[in-house]
Amino acid sequence: MKSSMRRKLLIIGTLSALVMISVFTLNVTNYPVFSQAFGVSVVTEYDEISALENDSSLIVDVIVEESEYFMYEEVPFTLSKVKIKNVYKGEAKKGDIINILETGGVFNNVEYSVETDEILKKKNQAILYLYEYEGPIKEGIDKYVVTGLHQGKFKYKDSVNNIVSTEHNAGELAEVKSIADLKLPE
Image (cartoon, rainbow, N blue to C red):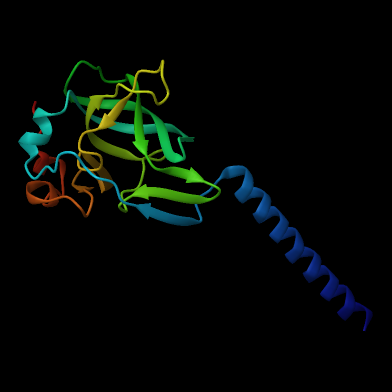
């Protein structure tokens, strides 16, 4: 009888400790448990890779080193530091670290994204079509934004032969499945 009571107390104590550790970890790490997509208007709808390239001052292959989430006028944003692996267009060099500003972010364990387009996260790799951001958000820091919001972001799924564009892309952009499909300049 005593061993049965001890076993119950041990199980209750262990479960309580696991719940407390889980709650603490979620609060400290801000790990996304839920997701919430919101819509925005895109100024230019791209359906040709050449148009996306023409409107971009920088085209790079990157890996995300770290991301910072913040709110600006009640809108979530992410500022990611990315390391350039390859430059296809623009004034940057392999190995440079640049900042990418995106609408969306993680707050209180909820990931906010624009139309199901996930923000860049640590260790993500992607081909990005960018232009330099000029505006009030994070003034004093040089930063870029993705051309066409989500249209100029192509994340690696598992290899260079398997990249993913957003489900909202149209025309040629919707057909992109690998780096070769992007017809990147040499």
